[in-house]
Image (cartoon, rainbow, N blue to C red; front, side, top):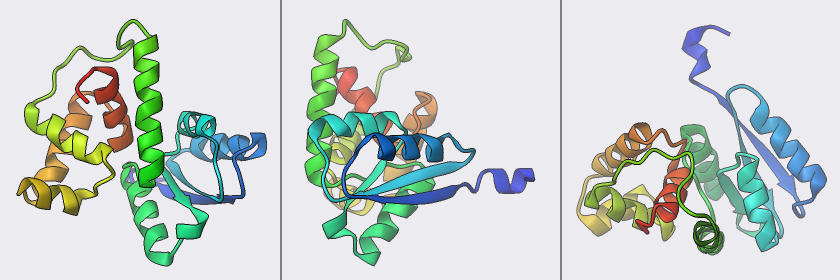
Length: 176
């Protein structure tokens, strides 16, 4: 593969009834491939499965009952960009679980000790509520480009993979 194509990457769509060992193995295999990101479409998922799926590197999840062409496209594009895209109910569960993990660990381990600006915190707080770039820009009266730049600068500076990772960092560091 030439260097011009290396940044492109691919997105794999995995459809499953539930999250079991076979699903997790498939996700690990897909995400372990070079330049492949995975979107999981699932009927049901236990709360405990969410962290397992996130641990496999999946950042986009769609409920099968909500899997319209437009919804799938949004999840695929988010995964391709390296962003997270979770249903609002899963995002709340994810944040709760991350908060529990934060309170059970002595401090942020392996994370750079770098602060976040109030603007970054306010954008991440809205991301954690499930808002997309357009909704965040409307809420804060910023352009969509500004919201994207804030997130890009934050993820680059803190060496984070995507929006979901940024929200998890903010939760662990006590910003959210």
